[in-house]
Image 1 (cartoon, rainbow, N blue to C red):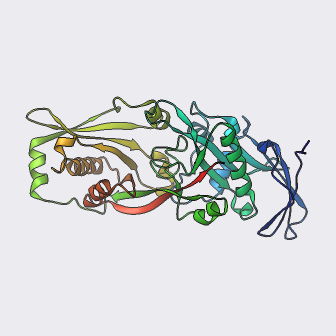
Image 2: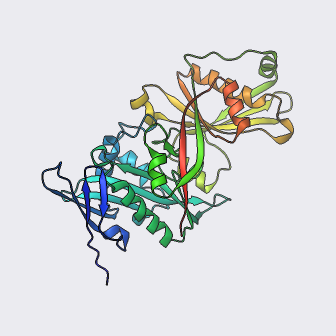
Length: 360
């Protein structure tokens, strides 16, 4: 019977493995030895315990996750976005801790949603988060966490895994990472491409994060927009209508509103969208922000400028409410949406990247 005790020796930044990975993955113990340190540090990899949120919350704030990661919020907020969703499974959140009980890293494995957004698709695994304390990076901890996450996903039936989730696919951390939505890893905050390539991953989805500073930009002016202002009326309701189970799991705990554009003469709906509050980023960014998503125009009414007018009219009203920053996330392949937002004075602020791997 194979022992669950295995050793790894880490000297500075080089990891030398002395044997194969254990099974089950989340119960192994590793010894990490470096001549730069005084003594030996024992690392344990295990599944989530109910007592972990304070340590995870502290690790989040110590890990310098980049400009698109919210900070300054309480442990209860972390639990709301990372632990509370109904599909959370404790075995999917794997932590690395030292002998003193300090959490130095974690990976959160989960699953994508099915096409109807009514349930999870257990064939498609997701790495919703991967965090390692800066003092413990480049010592093999991230790789060990990813390998254990893959083993968990494989055991639940996944045939592929997307590290970072992707646009509308990550069921956790929406509202505290990536901006409005946790659509991937921030490209400027980590050497993600090289790390995941070393773990056998290839490039996946890429999401553009577009933002507009309402205090520093002016609306475009042309005749068609002036005509729309006379003929169309915008309404804002407190809650989006007809949303899916997946939407309520991800955005239901956040402030959100539905915006609609109607013809003043006939009442016909010509465009609609959603805004989502991003108040958890105020401590880091220092300004009020909202996210703009799901802009829809009926097929026969496209190419008349209704979507642009909706975006610009909303920005005008948000400016009056002292909101300074508006964000949109768009897949890099969605040229129509990219054109819409750039023509509405949004600028590219960053990219969120995912990485993809088949599970044999």
